[in-house]
Length: 149
Image (cartoon, rainbow, N blue to C red):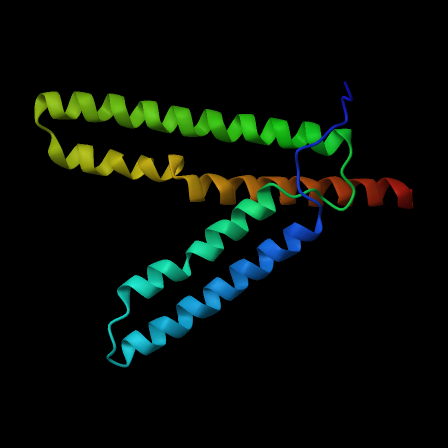
């Protein structure tokens, strides 16, 4: 069994994902302008974000230009941290909601429901992409600094 077998898409799909996000944002902006001018377009705005979510998924599942063991390790570490954050946020929301509902503290429950954004799949995906890209950026800066010395 080959240990270096990967289930990631080729790097070119990452570029497709970025273009899908850009196209989705432009489409949503165009639909919003039409809606401001008096034509109601609630459903098309929601539908225009579907390519953005698909683009996020493509970016997450695509390889970097140079995919090596360290980047695979980094991906695994970032995924585990993001999953842990999502689980902790979900557990905290459930516990606070249970306690607040038991004592009838509805405003406090509504305040802590804001934690639910931390286990939203889109937020988790964006968090993963940002964490991976920032980590790679800082690693490349550090490597360039060592190369100059």
